[in-house]
Length: 252
Ligand code: UDP
Image (tube, rainbow, N blue to C red; front, top):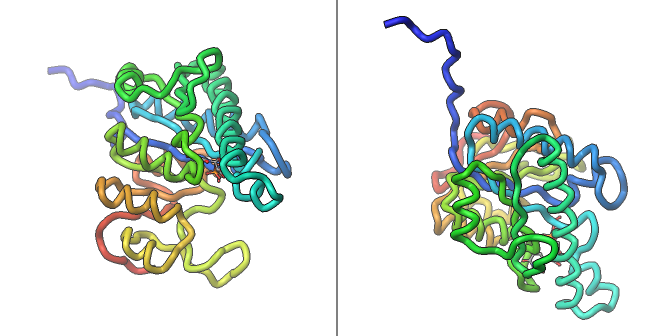
């Protein structure tokens, strides 16, 4: 037999993932709103892993535009403020869809709050089918319920889609013993267990999101989405990140 000269496909660590990107990442270096260059940078990395054959869905936060708690702090009714926050995530989802489609990635937005003229409603089976067809699905409007966050929405959709991992793309490259932006002695964990995150109250995701991932046995991978190529590295088991699973603490 003539040996194939084609390079072996890269070894993917996960086949189906949900990527959670906080709204704040999309601000880039601007103080507020959507920085399209930053959105395009995330879209470039997403497009690259979709090309590798990964089924990918996305949840994008809304903190760059509106947070329910900050609205409530200014005297707004909490539920109205939370609905404003959920609507903000729809804007981010549409911006990301645009950036992905400009890169030739087929994308569908599904909203937990139906808005027929703007995007599809969230229908689990339909979302699964989109993923099977190689489309990226962006879940917008969080869980559709006030008093929740997009972290919980990300965990919920990751469980519903049967994802192999929940990738949390933030502005730091993992989970640290303290805030590395304030404390230069902070150390990064390579691995953590769900229970360690909960008992030490480490600022990774909401406790409800961590608990749901624990119950579903879905690992959480925390990495910096700001570094170009980091998402690809993590998918290939390289680069700097923190993995949260059921196993006990490894060395810091
Ligand atoms: N939100 C909500 N229910 C959800 C998801 C989000 O009420 O299921 C609201 C909540 O007010 C939140 C805002 O939407 O503050 C934006 O989401 P989040 O703060 O999670 O965004 P991120 O921090 O990821 O940018």
